[in-house]
Length: 242
Image 1 (tube, one colour):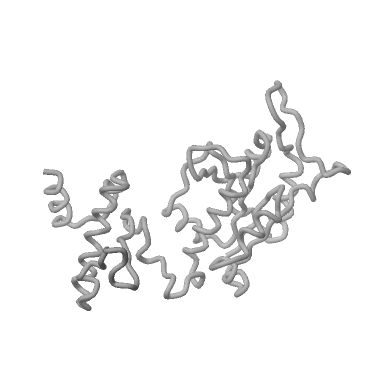
Image 2: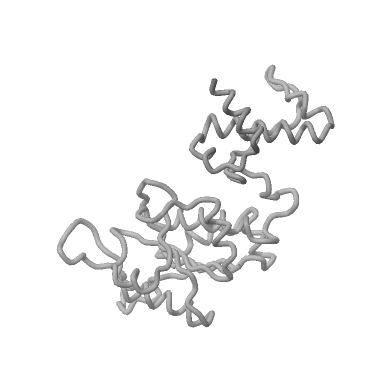
């Protein structure tokens, strides 16, 4: 899968995505992650890419032409207009289901805004999706873009090894992941639940499923409405509320 991140700070993006699982996948050729410097497409001799907004207001606005030219250079190179995500707090909230959906794409462009945003005209021209990582404002789109690349990449076949498999991670089936334990069996007076030491795989799976439901109820009850619960699990959950 190919990611093209349009940014004013390519070094920030490159350094943030060249380590750990994502870095290894890039080295192996499973992923291609490229930071495209928008400043390189400025017609200004000082590589200026911002100007004052019409109508007044605080701050500066990224100009349309450098952004468009950076996007077009990528589109021309790959021979098509790929899906282009503008990372903005005005977008819909990015979630695990969206990560799975986007992982089906061959090419993705992520556009990182800065200053007070980007000229609306170029957004209308190139953007296909508006996505946010939460209801708060950051200084730029680079950190959210890196979050999205990380989450999407984990859904791409070949990125995770068997030991790192995402099949039972949080948000699978709209449930949070069950609690996990490692050695020693007792730490500061806290013991590993006996079922995990039993070697009885069916009982372990049943316990983990129950713990996932309980944890979701305690920490993210909003997710339960969309969770794929059996009739027995729903009845058990209802009894907990009584």
